[in-house]
Length: 224
Image (cartoon, rainbow, N blue to C red):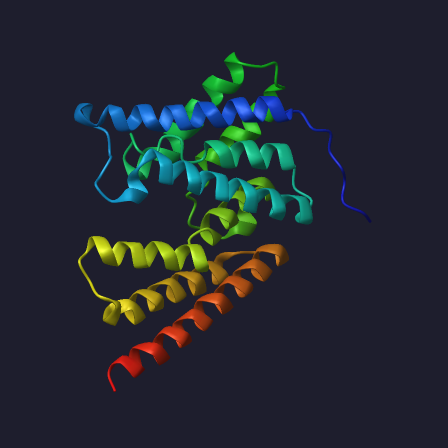
């Protein structure tokens, strides 16, 4: 039985408008820092980093949804809005806050079916769910898996090494940071349910292991 192809409800122009709105919302959250926003001095708490993370998650979530038979439109729109409130709400509340922003946008800027809006908002609200991913919708699962996978692999390694610079640590501590990425990757691999996400996690973990081995060899040479 083939994967059902669902009609696209969101045009490229509409999705581009949503993308611009999300970045503008994030930027406005940073500007309101003095009014209680969550912006910190690490670059990954900037509007630019958060938006880049969101776009990475959109790409991964689309791939997973398409290959696993989830509703791609629901998944990609939910992925786009999943962290829209990340810089203004408490960590524990950002998913619910993001769902409210998504609902307000979708209900006011388009004639989207109520069922579509509900599915998107449910996925956004549940994207921080820590339980068994078989308990959530396939769209929510695709989003959660994508969110986990963006922190793994070359991208996750680069972020950890960037963190080292801000913590005034040297390359001699890099093996510890690489191990953190590997631990995160193993945790992500143990949580994902879909074959597509498992394959991506496996590929990304291999990249981190290779980098860690090369780094270990070169640091050892520096000590000779």
